[in-house]
Length: 429
Length: 184
Image 1 (tube, rainbow over the protein chains, first blue to last red):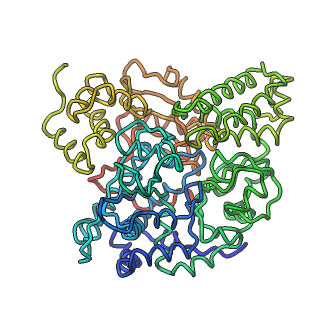
Image 2 (cartoon, chains in turn blue, green):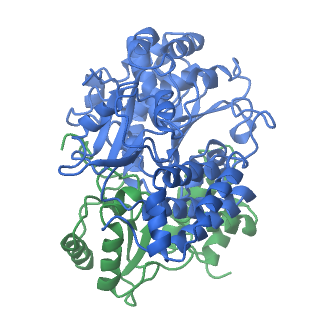
Image 3 (tube, each protein chain N blue to C red):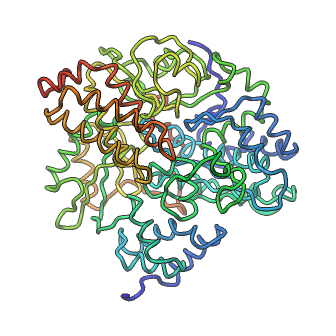
């Protein structure tokens, strides 16, 4: 196995690391102080040098978001943290929120300085009551210690961080829907650039806004600590995928959990760190990075696992959020795919017709399949519906159903045929 | 409108939330959470109206938001709201069987409440506890690694007896950092 430097998880196993005292004893907030001594432009330069890209799923270069914010303080700027982790298979942000909340807060402070924001909202999904409490308590501690509030550390700058609890809508993990939800509206997506201004120009309350994932913001801390150039040296694959990534590895492995690995390591490292496919079983398929990425074939295992390597080697949508779900040969693929289709059916906000109606049709087809009333032409019909959903909605929720269905049918057509011909699964459960 | 259930303390809580945002409307989601708590776990029309009036928003707008989000309950829920994750990471570890077992044990279908008002059972979409399936949420508390009917029995007995493992409040003591499956 390759070496995997622990940048985010450096002190993860230290008892009490979620408290401010222990965090400060382990260099806590020293990176924030270092950043405060730098100009906002210099902080952004470090982030650009590091090659950091969004860890929430889209992989958008972080420095572009940060540098697109106006370089003045004429109006309030906002930092919004996306902690609405809801992509099936993804449980990595929860570990940061629960276990190392001060890492997130320190990252927020660095980012707020870089984008000249004095207010930050952490949007946490409604189900995450315990992680929310953990973060809120850390925020309270940071206020008491003077890392948040007015004239922080004598810098003349004010920094406020608030938590905002969602209420159960997968759609709110989407940037524009999240902003709507934060402003007290239904969580529905909005028109995007170039037809509408970027959030960095006009985001929440029509003010410049940067929306970043929890893990992305947390990565700002080691970047400032070791410097962007050092951070960019970490990684084994593409020059465009640098640093480390948290993977929540679930499903049929011996040691499921959240692990930090360098980007671009062989996929086999992920399996190895999670103890391999559970004993006595073999790999059937896996979802590389959250359910919307689709199913990957069991070979190859040695390709570089990063933003570029995953789609090239597996035919899935990509690295996504880092939620790896492993399935062994006991997995009945049709019911599993049906569950994902039903999930997206349930979560579609209903704004755009291709997503709302398209997924509804897919759900009907899958219901027919498991009822034993499937028809042979249903498979091509499903693929055709996928083509008509893809890229035709305001946000990517509709697209999210396309790859699971497409890859599932293409890889496991014989299992679908078994359902259609006998009304039963090939896999005995 | 019926008698207001927002006392001064509730109003102070909402005022504190409103102060976090540039306008009153932005406090709608947090205010609905407060209202749901004050109204015993759900949001009847009166609760929505009270939030609307207090924030100065049209009632229709508040209803639109309250009905969009699944965690705002539109009908009364039991004392213990049991939600079992059935998404794929939990599905492949028998979530459906556990849900059926729960339905049989409580004598209700998912989505219903027991006649004594003790339990509401629901299926939940991915709870983000994928590494420790099957995940169950009761109120704000997660129970993870639930794989057997015996564990369900123990959980329900515990809840029925009115005893539940420590649930930390924002004011209270928070648990030590946990590893959530890592290095287990």
